[in-house]
Length: 485
Image (cartoon, rainbow, N blue to C red; front, side):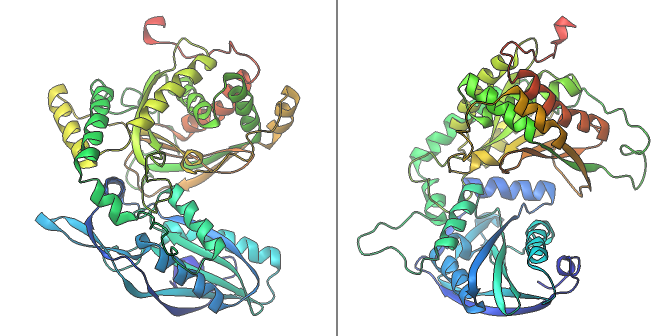
């Protein structure tokens, strides 16, 4: 683990050791990749990203390295997904193997004694943010979980980890965190049913009942994709100005920024209360309207993520159950409230049609390309992390929101450039981050279709639209269809 991510930390080169942690687990075996795994694996190949997830847990006072190792050993033993490696499969493909025993490593980072408690907390948070994107796992050799413990003034204070998206989605990550905090040491008791694991999921997906479910989902995808343009923003070329996008050799192609707005959060709560829906559907409607205002595109087909944990036997499985779906929303010539209603219906249908074999989807897309006479892809994604977490919104019942409350928070809005992004396989990806009390959007985009100025306008429009519609049921989207122009 020693390397650039340590050297770039707040305190330079922390003293680094590695402790071997043996484990054994009750399940082992081999299975094909599940549908969710195959989908994320294809995304990894297309984008060059591994989509690692990071986490952090503050240990109880007086914890030792042995305590931290026991937590890691317990996780590895209880969850087959954490003992997965890839192997060669039939016909030149790949499969997954779950080991019944093995050895992993716990990285021990000793922080200098003169670092304050506040500085230690900042270091842990910095490590959680910077380690996942820098770590490159070899899925044929490495385990999908890497964990480090921070030791300060003789005591272990924090666990920080990286979890591969190949074996878990956001919901599974939260379940693992709950398990880590509980620090259970035993498996199921006598007569207690074993929870389904990743191998169970992959094997069930080969059975006729789930194959039929995939077929129904693909009919929905075929209808949604039949008439889409070649790319989401193909008809909206970016007006590249000096310093704002690719103009020659060496210029960046991809950029990223973060938009944060407590005012938009309150405004969306007001809209959700009035329209009797949830924050996820309101956020989707507002973001779609912002895209329409900023680009002129009004009939949008967008990728969204669906949890699939509502399906029987899926609620507590540690596996990547979430899969892409698509929604088509026309944002022109209507009100924001009406658009929220459209988004609610469209996203519900999309969620019901988000469990499918991605290889068969590839065949459907290839056939549609041949029928259309051109290759077409949905290249704009809105990924709401909050929808992936099976936990009630702690702020769902905050009482009535007032216009004064919204106005008071407008000064806290921020738009921060995060600089160059190395690679992408979409034109735009808007990640709605799971942060309390704020609408936090991490946007990544291709500068060949949206300049930095256009993307900044899009993000600021999210707040503008939410505030305009918060207390006005008739607030228009202000997006016109082509026939109305």
